[in-house]
Length: 410
Ligand SMILES: Cc1cc2nc3c(=O)[nH]c(=O)nc-3n(C[C@H](O)[C@H](O)[C@H](O)COP(=O)(O)OP(=O)(O)OC[C@H]3O[C@@H](n4cnc5c(N)ncnc54)[C@H](O)[C@@H]3O)c2cc1C
Image 1 (tube, helix red, strand yellow):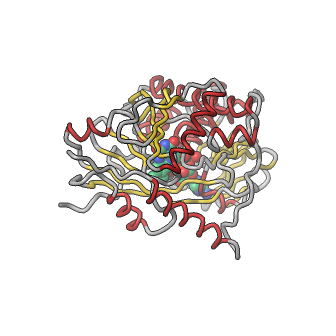
Image 2 (spheres, helix red, strand yellow; image 1 turned 180 degrees about the horizontal axis):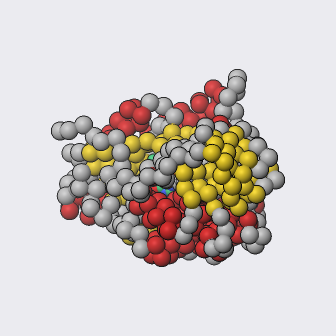
Image 3 (tube, helix red, strand yellow; image 1 turned 135 degrees about the vertical axis):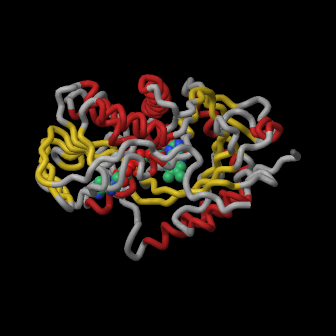
């Protein structure tokens, strides 16, 4: 058996390279970060006002961060579980948050179609499952909340091999790297100037400083997600978290049938989640975070169906906040930030880009709880950091105990 490749199994982000930025550049809008958030911001800005001069900078290249390395589950939901969201924000806002998140899924599906992206888009539902009594109780609380709010996720009457399952009818799966590539090609075609290998070192009054040049722009969008700490932008704590995934060789038809056609996420945080690709590979993420990648990949591999071969394994950095909600707002005058999607950014990043484009053009829709300048503080450094690490270890132990191992008779 060959050693697994340390990349996702789909195409790498396939875009022509762009030169690094040198000298003094001016623009109407500078966007820092060419992941899905930055690219979507550029796309919606230029779609709404083609006369804008937009510059897009990345420390690496498009999709170098999480966006080129996601597992490709496009699902609704944002922030805390719906029962907690009701308690925290009230029924009306909890309902509005869920409905907004369903809208984003539809928006990404539409966007992939408009771009003609060859990204293996597969629409359908998504299952949230429980595999232990404790998890089933948590899932039942969510099911009750959705029902009481008149929303469409509903328990499966026959959850099959799960203890309980809640089905979200509007969801999809896709190859996120191909969506990144399609967006990057589209914005380049519409005149957005992109500079690769151009890390922004600091943000001053209307000026970005890079190793070999500067950018002066009236407005700046910072879309660096889990990398924001190095820019010292006052957005509260968007903690960098390394997360991991594996993919198998294409599975036999009988095993694919047992897994079922719809992607599965676990109600237990960090427990394994998975989907099948159009080629029949099983892609699974979850497990220990911020530890050694080898350990996390082994943890995931132990939970795969017996006899399956791991052909790919990879990791990436996401941005986490203390209240599970992202930050999408004006951090300091003229500088906007969007990030902290807590690992659910495939739909949310595109939605954040659309929101920022509207906001920059003075047309922001009514705010929802994540439209804010800062996330709450978390002890990511200093004497309280061990508390956060202990909490992550506790979540990993619970995920091992309560999450599913995909062992079948096949
Ligand atoms: C393994 C893995 C699996 C995931 N699976 C899913 C999933 O199934 N479903 C889902 O919804 N979400 C998933 N996610 C999360 C999702 O991929 C992210 O939320 C989303 O891609 C974030 O996009 P972004 O553009 O905000 O950030 P990123 O894609 O991280 O982009 C940030 C960009 O900023 C650049 N940058 C950083 N610092 C600087 C600087 N100083 N100057 C210039 N550029 C800079 C980086 O190079 C990078 O390209 C997953 C993430 C990972 C890592």
